[in-house]
Image (cartoon, rainbow, N blue to C red; front, side, top):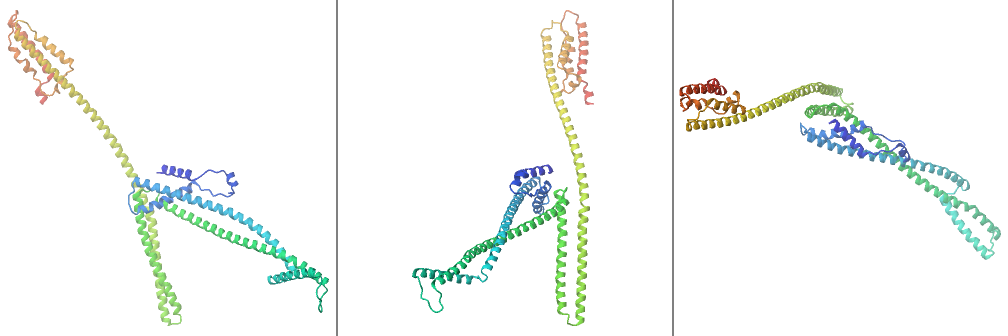
Length: 484
């Protein structure tokens, strides 16, 4: 599975990553880039695989190859999802850095403007120390009234002069001087309003920047937490490397039992701590009570602390047993696995030997079938020869004057048997008996007419038939010897 695992990792990386040179990244504004190593990616994949298998192992003790493949595909999807999320986080991080740089530049510009606005505000304070908003409005009203008076004076030429009044020319000059004095205040007030508006916008941008910085810090915290979680998962995964599904299930069951014990002890410990807090609060309330009651409360507190210590010792003992179980039982499982592999190899060798013997038996069966076929052919040849002998016999009976040499007939039969390839061993395998003695037994009593002396002819013929029958018997084999 390691080779397929590495191939899947490689395909996921090639699918979800792009190759960009450092110069191009620098042109785009990415001066500092985070790089994921192959080992980190493997850890992410193992984390995803462990998360998928963790939910399944509790349901089934044995995992088939098909289920493992399905789990692997689910893990691959989970890894692709994690890679995409990580890419999005990196993109958001890059955007935040870009926005951060832009806002820093704007803050510098606004700070410069603020400094210049402070200088103008100082000038404004010097020129109009009492120029508060109400005073400015009052001065604006006075300016409008003075302008109206100037227009009236210029139109009427003169104004009635009362007691203490100034001449028209002097009053006009006074009004013009007042207008000239108040005129710069309008420009300064307008500029001050613009600067206040810019300062307000800069303050909003600074607040937005602070908010983005806080988000970035939160992302860093989440990333650190994720790294810690990955390290924990890596340590847990290293404990299960090299184990098969049954061993993993067994270890998970044992760890589950230990976990239940630990949770039970933790709950008991929490109950004792809650009771201890309650007693501590009661002690505070009972400080002014009877010393005897306080002494009893102290004894109860000491008893609770003693029970808490015992529970902590039990918890430590269980944790030690857990570690011992993880160390001691894994080694026998590995030894047993090696023994099973050795037995499996021996079984494979025995299987190969058995197949070889079966092939040899098949070859022998084939040879036996071929031999049976040869025997059947020989049997047919013998039947044909018997037929020829019968025909020769009939010919002798019908033409007694013709001298027949039995030796020639037997020699001819033997030659045909040799051409058919019939040997003594093959003749013994012929299906059914061939009684050659019965074929020639009646020939001894046959008298043949001939120009030669009958007596000599009979003796010679009988002698020849017996010798030839003995030769045929040697081919067939003695029946008694065969049964023996």
